[in-house]
Length: 123
Image (cartoon, rainbow, N blue to C red; front, side, top):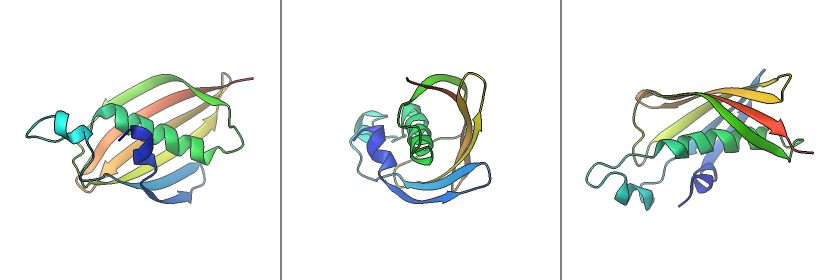
């Protein structure tokens, strides 16, 4: 399974004043868990970054040519395990260089990720 398929596990998306909130179910049987790490399954961090990116793209349908330009800040706070439910909160802003987002990802155990992404609009 790819990270983009994790975004397909979104169970709901709710608009907020500054962005969106989304819930994502982490499958128990994702093949990535067999190799990351054997005997102690953890979701790779790049999957979490991609889930946030997919939520941003879903929140900005008016910008189909939005490209991720930079990961400005990324702090992994706790592991994500098979079967976890992710709550993704994204705040969107329009910056001088292009759209930006600040995001947090939580599991039932607490914060898993704090992230800031910068985007550019392709012409």
